[in-house]
Amino acid sequence: MADEIILRAEKIRKVYPGTEALKDVDFNVYKGKVNVLVGENGAGKSTLMKILSGVEQPTTGCLFLNEEKLTQLTPVAAGEKGIGIIYQELNLFPNMDVSENIFLNRELMKNPGWIDHAAQKKRAGELLLRLEQNIDPGAMVHNLKVGQQQIVEIAKALAEDVKILIMDEPTSALSKSEVDVLFKIIDELKSNGVSIIYISHRLEELIQIGDYITVLKDGAFIVERPMENVTLQWIVSSMVGGDSSKIFHSGKRKIGDSLLTVNELFLQGNTEEPALNNVSFSVKKGEVLGVYGLLGAGRSELLETIMGIHEDAHGEVILDGEILGEPDILDRIKKGIALVPEDRQREGLVQSMSVSHNLTLAGLWRIVLGKIHILKDKERSSISKMFDGMSIKAPGPEVSITSLSGGNQQKVVFGKSLLTKPKVLLLDEPTRGIDVGAKGEIFNIMNDLAEKGLAIILVTSELKEIMAICDRVLVLSKGVVAGEFNKDEMTEDNLVNASALGHLTTSQRAKGKVL
Image (cartoon, rainbow, N blue to C red; front, side, top):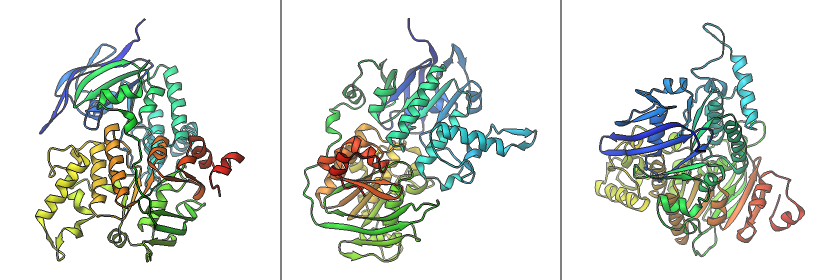
Protein backbone atom coordinates (compact mmCIF):
# COMPACT_ATOMS: atom_id res chain seq x y z
CA MET A 1 0.00 0.00 0.00
CA ALA A 2 1.39 3.38 -1.04
CA ASP A 3 2.13 5.92 1.67
CA GLU A 4 -0.41 8.72 2.02
CA ILE A 5 0.51 12.17 0.68
CA ILE A 6 -0.63 14.84 3.14
CA LEU A 7 0.77 17.95 1.39
CA ARG A 8 1.38 18.38 -2.31
CA ALA A 9 2.99 21.19 -4.31
CA GLU A 10 2.24 21.27 -8.04
CA LYS A 11 4.14 23.26 -10.66
CA ILE A 12 5.37 25.87 -8.17
CA ARG A 13 7.08 28.79 -9.86
CA LYS A 14 8.60 31.76 -8.02
CA VAL A 15 10.08 34.76 -9.79
CA TYR A 16 12.04 37.52 -8.07
CA PRO A 17 13.42 40.58 -9.87
CA GLY A 18 16.33 39.30 -11.93
CA THR A 19 16.00 35.61 -11.01
CA GLU A 20 13.66 32.63 -11.28
CA ALA A 21 14.03 30.85 -7.95
CA LEU A 22 11.64 27.95 -8.67
CA LYS A 23 10.73 26.49 -12.05
CA ASP A 24 7.51 24.42 -12.03
CA VAL A 25 8.56 22.36 -9.00
CA ASP A 26 6.53 19.35 -7.80
CA PHE A 27 6.99 18.20 -4.19
CA ASN A 28 5.20 15.54 -2.14
CA VAL A 29 5.06 15.31 1.66
CA TYR A 30 4.21 11.81 2.92
CA LYS A 31 2.24 11.49 6.16
CA GLY A 32 4.22 10.36 9.21
CA LYS A 33 7.48 10.26 7.24
CA VAL A 34 10.69 12.24 7.06
CA ASN A 35 10.64 13.90 3.66
CA VAL A 36 14.19 14.96 2.80
CA LEU A 37 14.82 17.86 0.43
CA VAL A 38 18.34 18.42 -0.96
CA GLY A 39 20.08 20.64 -3.48
CA GLU A 40 22.99 23.02 -3.82
CA ASN A 41 22.85 26.52 -2.37
CA GLY A 42 20.52 28.51 -4.58
CA ALA A 43 18.62 25.39 -5.69
CA GLY A 44 15.39 26.84 -4.27
CA LYS A 45 14.96 24.73 -1.12
CA SER A 46 14.40 27.59 1.34
CA THR A 47 12.18 29.44 -1.15
CA LEU A 48 9.96 26.38 -1.49
CA MET A 49 9.76 26.04 2.29
CA LYS A 50 8.76 29.70 2.64
CA ILE A 51 5.93 29.05 0.20
CA LEU A 52 4.78 25.93 2.07
CA SER A 53 4.76 27.90 5.35
CA GLY A 54 2.95 30.93 3.91
CA VAL A 55 5.86 33.37 4.16
CA GLU A 56 6.04 33.74 0.37
CA GLN A 57 3.38 33.44 -2.31
CA PRO A 58 4.11 31.41 -5.47
CA THR A 59 4.09 33.27 -8.76
CA THR A 60 2.19 30.33 -10.25
CA GLY A 61 1.32 26.83 -9.07
CA CYS A 62 -0.88 25.24 -6.40
CA LEU A 63 -0.63 23.77 -2.91
CA PHE A 64 -2.94 21.00 -1.65
CA LEU A 65 -3.30 19.94 2.00
CA ASN A 66 -5.27 16.67 2.26
CA GLU A 67 -6.55 17.54 -1.26
CA GLU A 68 -7.81 20.94 -0.04
CA LYS A 69 -6.44 23.66 -2.32
CA LEU A 70 -4.63 26.33 -0.32
CA THR A 71 -4.95 29.87 -1.65
CA GLN A 72 -3.18 32.98 -0.35
CA LEU A 73 -1.55 31.00 2.45
CA THR A 74 -0.14 33.19 5.26
CA PRO A 75 2.09 32.20 8.20
CA VAL A 76 -0.88 32.51 10.56
CA ALA A 77 -3.10 30.39 8.31
CA ALA A 78 -0.32 27.81 7.90
CA GLY A 79 0.01 27.59 11.68
CA GLU A 80 -3.73 27.11 12.06
CA LYS A 81 -3.55 24.24 9.56
CA GLY A 82 -0.74 22.60 11.53
CA ILE A 83 2.28 23.63 9.44
CA GLY A 84 5.30 24.72 11.53
CA ILE A 85 8.82 25.67 10.50
CA ILE A 86 12.32 25.87 11.98
CA TYR A 87 14.13 28.39 9.80
CA GLN A 88 17.71 28.04 8.59
CA GLU A 89 18.36 31.60 9.74
CA LEU A 90 17.42 31.88 13.41
CA ASN A 91 14.12 33.70 13.90
CA LEU A 92 14.40 34.79 17.53
CA PHE A 93 14.14 38.11 19.35
CA PRO A 94 17.46 38.74 21.14
CA ASN A 95 15.94 41.25 23.61
CA MET A 96 13.45 38.68 24.93
CA ASP A 97 14.07 35.67 27.15
CA VAL A 98 13.93 32.03 26.05
CA SER A 99 10.39 31.32 27.28
CA GLU A 100 9.02 34.52 25.69
CA ASN A 101 10.51 33.50 22.34
CA ILE A 102 9.12 29.98 22.57
CA PHE A 103 5.57 31.20 23.22
CA LEU A 104 5.61 34.33 21.07
CA ASN A 105 2.17 34.94 19.49
CA ARG A 106 0.70 32.01 21.42
CA GLU A 107 1.28 33.21 24.95
CA LEU A 108 -0.09 31.27 27.93
CA MET A 109 -2.61 33.55 29.64
CA LYS A 110 -3.78 33.82 33.24
CA ASN A 111 -6.81 35.74 32.07
CA PRO A 112 -7.47 38.10 29.15
CA GLY A 113 -4.68 40.64 29.00
CA TRP A 114 -2.32 38.93 31.48
CA ILE A 115 0.51 36.61 30.36
CA ASP A 116 1.29 33.74 32.71
CA HIS A 117 5.09 34.08 32.66
CA ALA A 118 5.57 31.46 35.36
CA ALA A 119 3.61 28.88 33.35
CA GLN A 120 5.57 29.75 30.20
CA LYS A 121 8.91 29.30 31.97
CA LYS A 122 7.75 25.97 33.45
CA ARG A 123 6.57 24.66 30.07
CA ALA A 124 9.70 25.99 28.31
CA GLY A 125 11.86 24.20 30.89
CA GLU A 126 10.01 20.94 30.16
CA LEU A 127 10.60 21.34 26.41
CA LEU A 128 14.30 22.06 26.93
CA LEU A 129 14.58 19.09 29.29
CA ARG A 130 13.02 16.95 26.57
CA LEU A 131 15.85 18.11 24.33
CA GLU A 132 18.32 17.26 27.14
CA GLN A 133 19.55 20.85 27.36
CA ASN A 134 20.33 22.80 30.51
CA ILE A 135 19.26 26.22 29.20
CA ASP A 136 17.63 28.67 31.61
CA PRO A 137 14.11 29.54 30.30
CA GLY A 138 14.63 33.03 31.73
CA ALA A 139 17.94 33.66 29.96
CA MET A 140 18.05 36.48 27.42
CA VAL A 141 18.48 35.10 23.91
CA HIS A 142 21.27 37.56 23.03
CA ASN A 143 23.40 35.89 25.72
CA LEU A 144 23.10 32.43 24.12
CA LYS A 145 25.53 30.95 21.61
CA VAL A 146 24.25 30.02 18.16
CA GLY A 147 23.92 26.32 19.01
CA GLN A 148 21.83 27.13 22.08
CA GLN A 149 19.66 29.46 20.01
CA GLN A 150 19.11 26.63 17.55
CA ILE A 151 17.91 24.45 20.42
CA VAL A 152 15.46 27.22 21.39
CA GLU A 153 14.15 27.29 17.80
CA ILE A 154 13.53 23.54 17.97
CA ALA A 155 11.78 23.89 21.36
CA LYS A 156 9.67 26.68 19.86
CA ALA A 157 8.50 24.34 17.11
CA LEU A 158 7.80 21.50 19.55
CA ALA A 159 5.54 23.83 21.57
CA GLU A 160 3.15 23.97 18.61
CA ASP A 161 0.58 21.29 17.81
CA VAL A 162 1.96 20.63 14.34
CA LYS A 163 0.94 18.09 11.72
CA ILE A 164 3.73 19.07 9.33
CA LEU A 165 7.07 20.33 10.67
CA ILE A 166 9.60 21.91 8.32
CA MET A 167 13.20 21.65 9.57
CA ASP A 168 15.56 23.81 7.52
CA GLU A 169 19.13 22.95 8.63
CA PRO A 170 18.08 22.14 12.24
CA THR A 171 21.42 20.52 13.15
CA SER A 172 23.88 22.92 11.51
CA ALA A 173 25.24 24.17 14.86
CA LEU A 174 24.70 20.99 16.88
CA SER A 175 27.22 18.33 17.87
CA LYS A 176 26.68 14.60 17.38
CA SER A 177 25.14 14.03 20.80
CA GLU A 178 22.66 16.89 20.35
CA VAL A 179 21.78 15.56 16.89
CA ASP A 180 21.08 12.12 18.39
CA VAL A 181 18.62 13.72 20.85
CA LEU A 182 16.87 15.56 18.00
CA PHE A 183 16.57 12.33 16.03
CA LYS A 184 14.86 10.67 19.00
CA ILE A 185 12.37 13.55 19.05
CA ILE A 186 11.78 13.13 15.31
CA ASP A 187 11.01 9.42 15.83
CA GLU A 188 8.49 10.37 18.53
CA LEU A 189 6.84 12.89 16.20
CA LYS A 190 6.65 10.33 13.38
CA SER A 191 5.02 7.76 15.69
CA ASN A 192 2.35 10.39 16.42
CA GLY A 193 1.66 10.88 12.71
CA VAL A 194 3.61 14.12 12.28
CA SER A 195 5.18 14.63 8.84
CA ILE A 196 8.70 16.08 8.74
CA ILE A 197 10.23 18.05 5.88
CA TYR A 198 13.97 17.86 6.52
CA ILE A 199 16.68 19.95 4.85
CA SER A 200 20.32 19.41 5.71
CA HIS A 201 23.73 19.55 4.07
CA ARG A 202 24.93 16.81 6.43
CA LEU A 203 24.30 14.06 3.90
CA GLU A 204 24.93 11.13 6.25
CA GLU A 205 22.07 12.42 8.42
CA LEU A 206 19.69 12.21 5.49
CA ILE A 207 20.37 8.55 4.90
CA GLN A 208 20.00 7.84 8.61
CA ILE A 209 16.76 9.75 9.22
CA GLY A 210 14.98 10.04 5.85
CA ASP A 211 12.10 8.04 4.37
CA TYR A 212 11.79 9.89 1.04
CA ILE A 213 14.22 12.18 -0.78
CA THR A 214 13.59 14.90 -3.35
CA VAL A 215 16.39 16.64 -5.24
CA LEU A 216 16.26 20.21 -6.61
CA LYS A 217 18.86 21.77 -8.89
CA ASP A 218 18.91 25.37 -10.15
CA GLY A 219 15.30 25.84 -9.04
CA ALA A 220 13.99 22.76 -10.85
CA PHE A 221 12.74 19.35 -9.69
CA ILE A 222 15.23 16.57 -10.52
CA VAL A 223 14.03 13.36 -8.87
CA GLU A 224 12.06 11.87 -5.97
CA ARG A 225 12.58 8.38 -4.59
CA PRO A 226 12.25 6.34 -1.37
CA MET A 227 15.36 6.49 0.80
CA GLU A 228 15.77 2.71 0.59
CA ASN A 229 18.99 1.86 -1.26
CA VAL A 230 19.92 5.54 -1.64
CA THR A 231 23.66 6.05 -1.17
CA LEU A 232 25.78 9.07 -0.35
CA GLN A 233 27.29 8.91 -3.83
CA TRP A 234 23.82 8.93 -5.43
CA ILE A 235 22.84 12.04 -3.47
CA VAL A 236 26.03 13.88 -4.42
CA SER A 237 25.74 12.87 -8.07
CA SER A 238 22.08 13.92 -8.21
CA MET A 239 22.87 17.30 -6.67
CA VAL A 240 26.16 18.30 -8.27
CA GLY A 241 27.79 15.32 -9.97
CA GLY A 242 31.17 13.99 -8.92
CA ASP A 243 32.62 11.72 -6.28
CA SER A 244 31.80 12.47 -2.65
CA SER A 245 35.01 10.82 -1.49
CA LYS A 246 37.00 13.66 -3.07
CA ILE A 247 35.14 16.35 -1.14
CA PHE A 248 36.47 15.59 2.34
CA HIS A 249 40.24 15.46 2.13
CA SER A 250 43.37 17.19 3.34
CA GLY A 251 46.03 18.46 0.99
CA LYS A 252 49.65 17.43 0.78
CA ARG A 253 51.15 20.26 2.75
CA LYS A 254 54.41 20.92 4.54
CA ILE A 255 53.99 21.93 8.17
CA GLY A 256 56.53 24.47 9.37
CA ASP A 257 57.46 26.24 12.58
CA SER A 258 55.03 27.47 15.21
CA LEU A 259 53.14 30.57 14.03
CA LEU A 260 50.55 31.17 16.76
CA THR A 261 50.90 30.31 20.44
CA VAL A 262 48.40 30.96 23.21
CA ASN A 263 49.32 30.61 26.86
CA GLU A 264 46.86 30.20 29.72
CA LEU A 265 43.86 31.89 28.10
CA PHE A 266 41.19 32.56 30.69
CA LEU A 267 37.69 33.96 30.12
CA GLN A 268 34.99 34.03 32.77
CA GLY A 269 32.05 34.39 30.38
CA ASN A 270 28.40 34.66 31.42
CA THR A 271 28.23 31.60 33.69
CA GLU A 272 29.62 30.61 37.09
CA GLU A 273 32.16 28.29 35.45
CA PRO A 274 34.82 29.92 33.22
CA ALA A 275 34.19 29.81 29.47
CA LEU A 276 37.95 29.21 29.05
CA ASN A 277 40.12 27.93 31.87
CA ASN A 278 43.87 28.36 31.25
CA VAL A 279 43.88 27.03 27.68
CA SER A 280 47.32 26.70 26.08
CA PHE A 281 48.36 25.36 22.65
CA SER A 282 50.16 26.34 19.46
CA VAL A 283 49.49 26.01 15.74
CA LYS A 284 52.17 25.83 13.05
CA LYS A 285 52.57 27.32 9.60
CA GLY A 286 50.71 25.18 7.08
CA GLU A 287 48.79 23.32 9.79
CA VAL A 288 45.01 22.90 10.06
CA LEU A 289 44.18 22.53 13.74
CA GLY A 290 40.69 21.32 14.56
CA VAL A 291 38.79 22.23 17.71
CA TYR A 292 35.94 19.93 18.73
CA GLY A 293 33.55 19.91 21.67
CA LEU A 294 29.91 19.97 22.73
CA LEU A 295 27.74 23.07 23.16
CA GLY A 296 29.18 25.23 25.91
CA ALA A 297 32.66 23.69 25.64
CA GLY A 298 34.24 27.07 24.85
CA ARG A 299 35.01 26.57 21.15
CA SER A 300 33.67 29.91 19.88
CA GLU A 301 34.95 31.75 22.94
CA LEU A 302 38.45 30.45 22.17
CA LEU A 303 38.46 31.91 18.65
CA GLU A 304 36.85 35.14 19.83
CA THR A 305 39.49 35.58 22.53
CA ILE A 306 42.33 35.05 20.06
CA MET A 307 40.64 37.63 17.81
CA GLY A 308 40.58 40.17 20.65
CA ILE A 309 36.81 40.36 21.03
CA HIS A 310 36.72 39.78 24.81
CA GLU A 311 38.44 42.66 26.59
CA ASP A 312 38.16 40.92 29.96
CA ALA A 313 40.09 37.83 28.81
CA HIS A 314 43.48 37.04 30.32
CA GLY A 315 46.45 35.19 28.88
CA GLU A 316 49.10 35.57 26.22
CA VAL A 317 48.71 35.49 22.42
CA ILE A 318 51.96 35.27 20.44
CA LEU A 319 51.86 35.70 16.65
CA ASP A 320 55.01 34.94 14.66
CA GLY A 321 57.18 35.61 17.71
CA GLU A 322 55.45 38.87 18.67
CA ILE A 323 53.45 39.10 21.89
CA LEU A 324 50.21 40.86 21.00
CA GLY A 325 49.03 43.63 23.30
CA GLU A 326 45.65 44.29 24.86
CA PRO A 327 42.64 42.89 22.98
CA ASP A 328 42.03 45.08 19.90
CA ILE A 329 40.17 43.63 16.93
CA LEU A 330 41.44 46.03 14.25
CA ASP A 331 45.02 45.70 15.46
CA ARG A 332 44.83 41.90 15.30
CA ILE A 333 43.30 42.02 11.82
CA LYS A 334 46.20 44.19 10.65
CA LYS A 335 48.70 41.88 12.39
CA GLY A 336 47.31 38.97 10.38
CA ILE A 337 44.46 37.27 12.30
CA ALA A 338 41.04 36.86 10.68
CA LEU A 339 37.84 35.27 11.99
CA VAL A 340 34.90 33.73 10.15
CA PRO A 341 32.27 33.89 12.94
CA GLU A 342 29.68 31.23 13.67
CA ASP A 343 26.71 33.61 13.38
CA ARG A 344 26.93 35.10 9.90
CA GLN A 345 23.75 37.14 10.27
CA ARG A 346 24.64 39.06 13.44
CA GLU A 347 28.43 39.01 13.39
CA GLY A 348 29.55 38.32 9.82
CA LEU A 349 27.38 40.60 7.67
CA VAL A 350 25.82 44.06 7.60
CA GLN A 351 22.30 43.35 6.35
CA SER A 352 21.71 46.84 4.92
CA MET A 353 24.82 46.73 2.71
CA SER A 354 25.54 45.24 -0.69
CA VAL A 355 27.55 42.10 -1.38
CA SER A 356 30.56 44.15 -2.52
CA HIS A 357 30.57 46.40 0.53
CA ASN A 358 30.31 43.39 2.85
CA LEU A 359 33.23 41.72 1.08
CA THR A 360 35.59 44.69 1.44
CA LEU A 361 34.48 45.90 4.88
CA ALA A 362 37.06 44.12 7.06
CA GLY A 363 39.95 44.86 4.68
CA LEU A 364 38.92 48.38 3.71
CA TRP A 365 42.25 49.74 4.90
CA ARG A 366 43.95 47.75 2.12
CA ILE A 367 42.12 49.55 -0.70
CA VAL A 368 42.19 53.16 0.49
CA LEU A 369 44.58 55.99 -0.32
CA GLY A 370 45.16 58.07 2.77
CA LYS A 371 42.14 57.59 5.03
CA ILE A 372 39.16 58.52 2.86
CA HIS A 373 39.79 57.77 -0.82
CA ILE A 374 38.83 54.26 -1.98
CA LEU A 375 40.87 52.97 -4.92
CA LYS A 376 38.00 51.81 -7.12
CA ASP A 377 40.10 49.70 -9.50
CA LYS A 378 41.67 47.85 -6.58
CA GLU A 379 38.24 47.43 -4.97
CA ARG A 380 36.71 46.00 -8.17
CA SER A 381 39.67 43.66 -8.66
CA SER A 382 39.42 42.34 -5.08
CA ILE A 383 35.66 41.80 -5.38
CA SER A 384 35.99 40.04 -8.75
CA LYS A 385 38.70 37.76 -7.33
CA MET A 386 36.47 36.72 -4.44
CA PHE A 387 33.44 36.15 -6.67
CA ASP A 388 35.49 33.79 -8.83
CA GLY A 389 37.49 32.16 -6.04
CA MET A 390 34.48 31.51 -3.78
CA SER A 391 32.01 30.78 -6.64
CA ILE A 392 29.52 33.29 -5.20
CA LYS A 393 26.18 33.02 -6.97
CA ALA A 394 24.62 36.48 -7.21
CA PRO A 395 23.21 38.66 -10.02
CA GLY A 396 26.06 41.09 -9.32
CA PRO A 397 28.22 42.55 -6.56
CA GLU A 398 25.93 45.55 -6.00
CA VAL A 399 22.83 43.55 -5.00
CA SER A 400 21.76 43.47 -1.36
CA ILE A 401 23.41 40.77 0.76
CA THR A 402 19.91 39.70 1.89
CA SER A 403 19.04 38.62 -1.67
CA LEU A 404 21.59 35.79 -1.54
CA SER A 405 20.94 32.27 -0.28
CA GLY A 406 22.31 31.32 3.13
CA GLY A 407 25.20 29.39 1.63
CA ASN A 408 26.24 32.24 -0.64
CA GLN A 409 26.06 34.66 2.28
CA GLN A 410 28.48 32.35 4.11
CA LYS A 411 30.84 32.47 1.14
CA VAL A 412 30.81 36.27 1.35
CA VAL A 413 31.77 36.11 5.04
CA PHE A 414 34.61 33.73 4.21
CA GLY A 415 35.77 35.91 1.31
CA LYS A 416 35.68 39.03 3.50
CA SER A 417 38.17 37.40 5.88
CA LEU A 418 40.48 36.31 3.07
CA LEU A 419 40.63 39.87 1.68
CA THR A 420 42.41 40.96 4.89
CA LYS A 421 45.30 38.66 3.79
CA PRO A 422 45.65 36.82 7.12
CA LYS A 423 48.51 34.75 8.49
CA VAL A 424 46.16 32.91 10.86
CA LEU A 425 42.60 32.08 9.81
CA LEU A 426 40.04 31.27 12.53
CA LEU A 427 37.03 29.40 11.15
CA ASP A 428 33.98 28.93 13.38
CA GLU A 429 31.59 26.46 11.71
CA PRO A 430 32.50 27.75 8.19
CA THR A 431 30.44 25.09 6.40
CA ARG A 432 27.24 25.68 8.38
CA GLY A 433 24.35 25.82 5.91
CA ILE A 434 26.58 25.15 2.88
CA ASP A 435 25.93 22.43 0.32
CA VAL A 436 28.27 19.55 -0.40
CA GLY A 437 29.73 21.15 -3.53
CA ALA A 438 30.46 24.43 -1.74
CA LYS A 439 32.04 22.50 1.14
CA GLY A 440 34.43 20.93 -1.34
CA GLU A 441 35.32 24.39 -2.64
CA ILE A 442 35.99 25.71 0.86
CA PHE A 443 38.12 22.68 1.77
CA ASN A 444 40.16 23.18 -1.40
CA ILE A 445 40.67 26.83 -0.45
CA MET A 446 41.71 25.79 3.07
CA ASN A 447 44.20 23.31 1.63
CA ASP A 448 45.61 25.94 -0.75
CA LEU A 449 45.97 28.47 2.07
CA ALA A 450 47.67 25.92 4.33
CA GLU A 451 50.08 25.00 1.53
CA LYS A 452 50.99 28.69 1.31
CA GLY A 453 51.92 28.66 5.00
CA LEU A 454 48.79 29.96 6.71
CA ALA A 455 47.87 28.52 10.09
CA ILE A 456 44.19 27.55 10.24
CA ILE A 457 42.11 26.82 13.34
CA LEU A 458 38.83 25.11 12.44
CA VAL A 459 35.87 24.74 14.79
CA THR A 460 33.21 22.37 13.46
CA SER A 461 30.55 20.07 14.88
CA GLU A 462 30.91 17.66 11.95
CA LEU A 463 33.22 14.81 12.92
CA LYS A 464 33.75 13.62 9.35
CA GLU A 465 34.99 17.04 8.32
CA ILE A 466 37.32 17.52 11.27
CA MET A 467 38.89 14.07 10.86
CA ALA A 468 39.35 14.48 7.12
CA ILE A 469 40.73 18.01 6.84
CA CYS A 470 42.67 18.51 10.09
CA ASP A 471 46.26 17.59 10.89
CA ARG A 472 45.61 17.67 14.64
CA VAL A 473 42.55 18.09 16.88
CA LEU A 474 42.08 19.68 20.30
CA VAL A 475 38.99 18.63 22.21
CA LEU A 476 37.48 21.17 24.60
CA SER A 477 35.18 20.30 27.48
CA LYS A 478 33.85 22.87 29.95
CA GLY A 479 36.48 25.39 28.95
CA VAL A 480 39.56 23.16 29.28
CA VAL A 481 41.59 21.10 26.80
CA ALA A 482 40.31 17.57 27.44
CA GLY A 483 42.29 15.83 24.71
CA GLU A 484 44.72 16.27 21.83
CA PHE A 485 44.92 13.85 18.90
CA ASN A 486 47.21 13.60 15.89
CA LYS A 487 46.04 12.44 12.46
CA ASP A 488 46.50 8.74 13.13
CA GLU A 489 44.80 9.02 16.55
CA MET A 490 41.59 10.68 15.32
CA THR A 491 38.60 8.41 15.67
CA GLU A 492 35.00 9.29 16.32
CA ASP A 493 35.10 7.44 19.65
CA ASN A 494 38.21 9.29 20.80
CA LEU A 495 36.82 12.72 19.97
CA VAL A 496 33.33 12.12 21.36
CA ASN A 497 34.59 10.49 24.55
CA ALA A 498 37.14 13.24 25.17
CA SER A 499 34.43 15.87 24.71
CA ALA A 500 32.57 14.26 27.64
CA LEU A 501 35.68 14.78 29.84
CA GLY A 502 36.67 11.84 31.96
CA HIS A 503 34.92 9.11 29.96
CA LEU A 504 37.96 7.85 28.07
CA THR A 505 39.21 4.33 28.54
CA THR A 506 42.79 3.62 29.58
CA SER A 507 43.78 2.65 26.02
CA GLN A 508 42.21 5.81 24.62
CA ARG A 509 44.07 7.91 27.19
CA ALA A 510 47.30 6.30 25.99
CA LYS A 511 46.61 7.37 22.40
CA GLY A 512 45.79 11.02 23.11
CA LYS A 513 47.04 13.54 25.61
CA VAL A 514 44.15 13.90 28.03
CA LEU A 515 44.42 16.58 30.67
